[in-house]
Image (cartoon, rainbow, N blue to C red; front, side):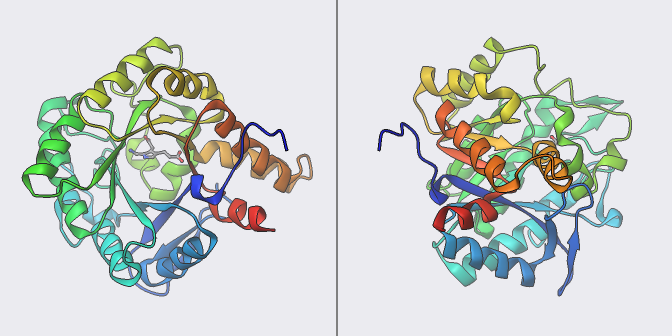
Amino acid sequence: MVAETRLDARNLIWPLFILPGSGQCQPVESLPGVNRYSIDLLLVQVEKAIRLGISAVALFPVTPLELKTEDGREALNPYNLMCSAASAIRQRFGEEIGVVCDVALDPYTTHGQDGLLIDGRIVNDPTLDVLSQQAVLQAQAGATIIAPSDMMDGRVGAIRSALDAAGLTETLIMSYAAKYASAFYGPFRDAVGSKGNLGAGNKKTYQMSPANSSEAMHEVALDLREGADIVMVKPGLPYLDIVQRVKEHFSVPTAVYQVSGEYAMLIAAAERGWLEREAVILESLLAFRRAGADLILTYFAHDAAELLVQ
Ligand code: PBG
């Protein structure tokens, strides 16, 4: 009766990995319980999400190696996996569920970086142009929310202008505003197959240092000024202080990403019987709500939504 915070399926966004072909369902070894699906089977998962009242799905493509290039040009193929999946979901389900498309080049580059790499360095400004085109193609295919996860400077403004110029004024932008250079992304890079590409490389020149908190406020302020509708903090549990600071200061729709490594930790302990699976899922998600998150991207979305209706 006196609970200050509640968790609802409406707060959840479910990340899903897309495979080429049809009839394909592949488990992700480092994310037990998470599968990658070809589009036909992805639609079955999306239907389950709608039935459970989940707000949106966030799509991530597993690009075949032979389509990866130095410049990641597959990102600009209007019939790539991401665009085809967004369009299939919208055709089948209309506006029953939000479709979040990730904007970044890492699924498409041979070096696994989120931006263009010239002479071993990420080049910020030339990357903006590619990201803007990528976002327009995704929105035209059916994305309702464009989610730039690349962390290039100025990309939210560039993407907003490009969307507006293409008449896509109603497409929302959820920016990965405070995205840290985190070791908790490991299993995700396995899932989309970018780990081998990235090799010994890292993303520290554009993702944030875990030492910083005020810088996150600056990043969020910039993205809001450039036109972000929703801002995100990522990872989640180790960065709850950032979620709380952002929500309290800006009072804007705030999302948090419970990333792959956080999922893997909880599942690994639950598999050994060291943690009680259902209890830790719901407790961790409620903690995000208590810190101030309106939306939570989590690989537990489906399971949590099922627990919530019981
Ligand atoms: C890529 C991207 C990453 C995640 C979402 N989009 C990985 C990265 O930045 O290397 C991580 C999600 C997760 O770990 O669950 N731009």
